[in-house]
Amino acid sequence: MKTIIPKRNDSDEKEKKIMKNPKECFSIVQNQTFIVLNELTRPECKDGSEPLTFHHETFSRFNFVIISADKKATTANIPVREIPGIFEKVHDLKMKHLLTARPVSEGASESPAYTTIINAGKLKGKTPAAALAEDGAKGENLLKSQVQWLKQNLAAYPRNAVQIQAIEAALQLYHEGRLNQQEAQKGCVETETIYRAELRPLTRRKKGDKCFVYSIYIRWNPGAERPIEIEIVNFYAPVVKTDKGLLNVLAKEKTDEVRNRFSLTIDQWCWLEHILETNIRTFENEHAGSLYRMAEEEKKRGMEALRNSNGAA
Image (cartoon, rainbow, N blue to C red):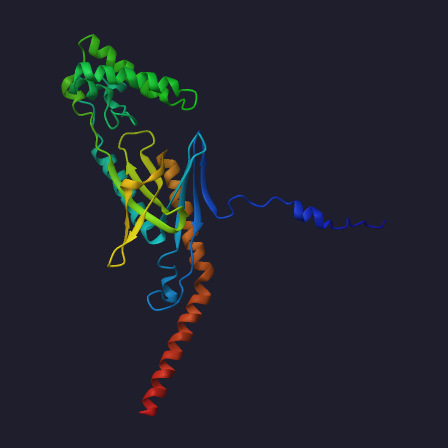
C-alpha cells in the first residue's frame, strides 16, 4: 500500500499562534494575575562585567507583573543578584514564625477570634480580639465594616469566610462580656519588609516629558493565610539627573499612578522559589561553556601580551 504523505501547507505555519509571553516562567491566575518573566542576560564581557560573572550587571533580572481584576497592570524589575537574599529572608521568617508561634494561654478559648489575623484594611496584622481589646467601640465599628467588605468580596474570595467567622466570634465574645483581655492583647503582629526598591525610573519609557517609574515591596504578614505580599506601584514623573549623575524622581509631580497587591501562600512561594532558582541554574549552565572558553582565551591573550611586552623591553 502506498503511503500518502500530506503536503506541508505554509499557510498553516503562518497561522500558528505566537506565544503571548514566551519569557514567562511563573504565573498564578485568580481574580488577579501574577506573572514573572525571565529577563536573564549574559555579561558584556568588558571591564567590570567579566565572563565568569555569568550575568549582565544591570540587565539580568526577573520582571514581576501584577494585573488587577480590572485589567490594570503594574510591573517592576528585580535584579537577579537580589533573588538569593530575598529567598534567604523568607526562609528566616518562616523559621522565626514557627519558633515564636504563640500558644493559646491555659484556660483561654481557642476561638478563631484570638488566632485569625486580619490581612487587609485598617486592622491588618491584628486579630479581631486584639482590635476589640485596644478600643472596644472603635474596634467594633471597624470590625463590622470589615465584615461588610469581606462579604461583598466573598464570591471572588471564598476564604474570606474564615475571617468573617473569626470577627463574628470576637464580636459575640465582646457583647457577652467573655473577651479574654490578656489573650486578646497578644493578637497584634507586625508586618516585616522582605525587599523594597523604591522610585526606579526607566528613562527610555516616556509619556511626554515624564518617565516611567516603578516601586516594588515584598512583605511578610505573619499569621496570614497568604503571608507573602507583593506590592508594585507604577507612575510617570519628571526625572532629573544630578551633578553626580544620579537620577532624581520628582514624585510630587507624578501622574497615572497604579498600585497593585498580590499575596501568596507558603506553597505558592515555595514553587516560585523553585522555578526562579531553576531558571537561574539552567541559564548559567546554558552559557557556562562559552563563557569559560572566553575567560580562558582572554587569560591566554593577556599572558601572551605580557610576554611580548617583556620581550620588547
